Image (cartoon, rainbow, N blue to C red; front, top):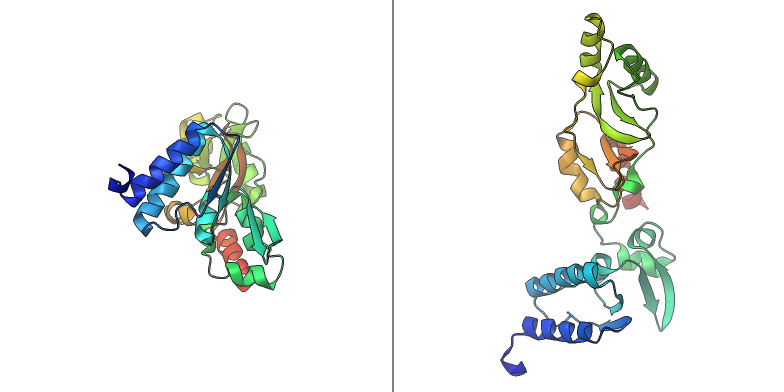
Amino acid sequence: MPAQLSGGMQQRVGLARALALDADIMLMDEAFSALDPLIRKNMQDELLSLQEDVQKTIIFISHDLDEALKLGDRIVLMKDGAIVQQGTAEEILTNPANEYVEKFVEEVDMTKVLTAESVMVDYGEMANAKTDGPRAALHKMRKLKTSSIFVGRNRKLEGIVFADDASKLLERGEKTLEQIIKTDIPTVAPDTVAKDLFPLMAQLSYPLAVVDEKHRLKGIVVKGALLGALSENKSD
């Protein structure tokens, strides 16, 4: 019987019933507010997992900003029955419309909001493993003012070459880069949040590559740009 179910199980049954109706739009009014923090987190994760499969439009009402940031593709902030601001989480947090929104979001951890796409910088010319030799790669590194260069064709990332390795090839009279390309390098998607970038960047002596679903290089994240973006948003 329903009364024999725990609060979390009752919420799961309610969610299942709503999905079973196969409605185009679902309205969820404070659906998880009465749950303890652990079950609430589990239900949020379950909803996100289900949403990947069912692709429903869900209007989710919540007074919990962290919940809205986690679940919402777009967020609408209301005050006294009127819309104050709407947009993505990043738009609202980095560009609040007024003092009310600023106070509403001031305690948010920006490392969970800023993404690789928002802090990445453009990358210049890549080396081409088919046409560039060590001399050409070193020339491009000098232009970029770096000691390494990403390798690829049509922006599709294949790996990275380091100046020391290219110099050794040049000394030996080698004409191609293929034997010194490091292909096992970390990459991130544009929507990777800042808190997940730090552990990766701590292990790297070169910029972190940001790639799209086709593994094309969209930009790079450098530590200075990442820390600068976080500092700028804190000061704002």
